[in-house]
Length: 145
Image 1 (cartoon, rainbow, N blue to C red):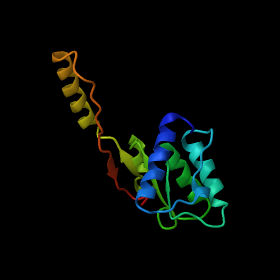
Image 2 (tube, rainbow, N blue to C red):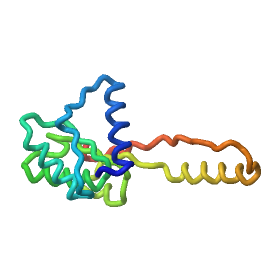
Image 3 (cartoon, rainbow, N blue to C red):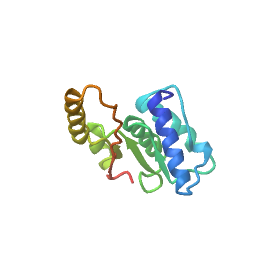
Image 4 (tube, helix red, strand yellow):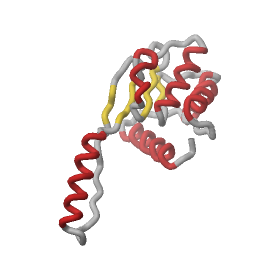
């Protein structure tokens, strides 16, 4: 979980929460070496041992969110009734987990169109300035929130 994307997503999440004056309990912020469902499951099990529980959990990847859901349900709690869960990536199975995992997706069609436009411009103007483009992610609300 300590890879660049995870670290970046974590920093952006914490900065965004701060910008909205929404405190984040540092005990709820977990990183580990396990990846995928196992990583989410193990980190959620740790959180479930704390005296206070979060209202919601954001996982850096959908697979981790799926593992977190399993740990929450295994403990007898309900998703989203007791703890809401949101993932990141909108992997294909996300729509089928627990009635559908709320997730943050990437608009790949937009990304492809912008890439083609930039490449075409670059071919026509090979010495032009490099371009940096920010693509707005998609919030896909499903049953886990």
